Image (cartoon, rainbow over all chains, first blue to last red; front, side, top):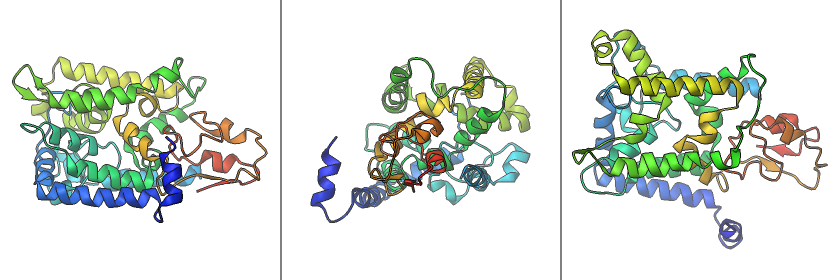
Length: 54
Length: 272
């Protein structure tokens, strides 16, 4: 749990910037794998399970 | 601060559920905005929802054949989490707003935590790893993978998705069965608990809270504490809706950045 405290001192960038950078990389990997389309397909069809019917 | 937070919560809920045609017709929005996720727990089957639910998105990716790392969902979690942490829960989650408003109704004497709080807080990790994770990856009845959290737990889906849809869509009403009554019962339980305990779903069951809580330690938005000016009067702990001490505020995974501690500090040594 002390990792972040120590990492703050060693790194020029605060940890949240690395988190944002990781998020952007994950977005890129997700887009390359067509994952946004999977999410969209699920979200635009009425999810019967989500509303407790299916 | 309390007034500002309520305004932000209401405005954000209205904007992200602004597809009024859906409420009138009992249908859902099918446009391109649903490629993206909102930060809070907002069912994508809500007739008004203009974007996807991040937990629903994660489960949809885990429900795919075989196994692939759900990168796009992780992207949203890292982006929102690194910038905001559980500020999302305190300021941007529609179901958080519902619980906040319920807690203000002066019916029962109010309490911050349930008995066995220190055990119950692990419920949200069980919810995350058990229902969202494992529950979405295993085959259901050897046949298909299901979004287990959405299907069996999510009260936001019942409140924001099922009830408006069932109200406006007669065809759906004819399909209601035992599963709906289980979820409706769970929603009622959370509503009744919210009248007494502060945000019981967020504290004990929400998988999104478990994820954003991990980012609280290092997110950009923090509640800063000037400990050299602090007199340890305890006003912030008294004001904190989840009873965090001044040393725990902001870094604790339970802190939702509501800002009540900031307003309560007589020496102004807490600030965003």
